[in-house]
Image (cartoon, rainbow, N blue to C red):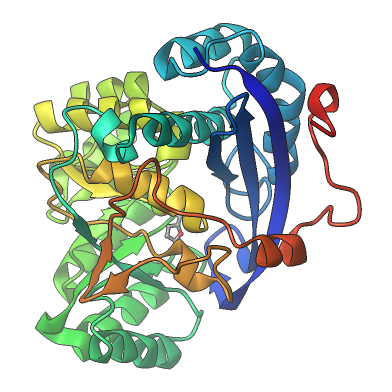
Length: 385
Ligand code: MUC
Ligand code: MG
């Protein structure tokens, strides 16, 4: 039996190393909701709820994630044996609809605590347990400038940090975007896999034209070219275009995964812990994809270190991960808020082997980046505990 004794949720705002240009927003920093839960024995668990560009990507913002946790989820946790993560999250699901990012952050913290209590990494608590210790990691070239993107790609190859590149397109005219992608494919040649993410910004007609042209210039994968809720149009594109279509914004957990698989609406799934509603739900999405012959890719919401490592623990349980991962979020930020930096080397990220998530926050950095540093928010009931 484990009882919650303290819940601390706070937003940290960390600048990015360069502007990150996406179809719907340009990021200059990342705002992450960090959840720190402590039980009566002093065992601590960390979780993260992070989105992209405020409310421009999804239906939850950093502020709404924090408020959902503080106001509605923590009171449920106070009534549970939080050592039982599945049962606790089932009770949370009965009391709180939607709010996948907030639930994911809390489930991550509970799993971190459970792993620490049991002395095993979180990856051993998901599905059939861990099957790999490192994950291939893509980088997103999204400076908004072709020459700068090529130079950045070359530097990543040279440093042996990344050889999979995702380009963010969908903002410009389709032909201009394809010219940009073609120039990068030509420059990097067979030393790299080049993929694109349109973040839903094309119409079906634009996607038909764009996907055909992208196949010709050597692009390997097209992520969410059109609106994620237009499953019928995704199916038309996926079944007629040569370049595989990856579902991202269309995926909101197991039910949506089943609908997309049944409709033949994607050749690849971008697995995301927050969008899926947690680590357990992500494993279910992966199982549905794998059973349907859909390729798997470990996606990111550009989380910082906590969310990235939580994702890594889930992806480490997947025997089939044909498209690798894009768990580079912490590298896009000027600082990591951990005592030990994550292990990026040889085109991969090492999955920690210690109990729980296997990471620890650097308290000085947290204090520096914390948005509420002058007025920390502890859950009212437990403030001062
Ligand atoms: C997305 O839509 O996939 C992932 C990498 C990146 O640069 O943005 C994200 C979000
Ligand atoms: Mg995407």
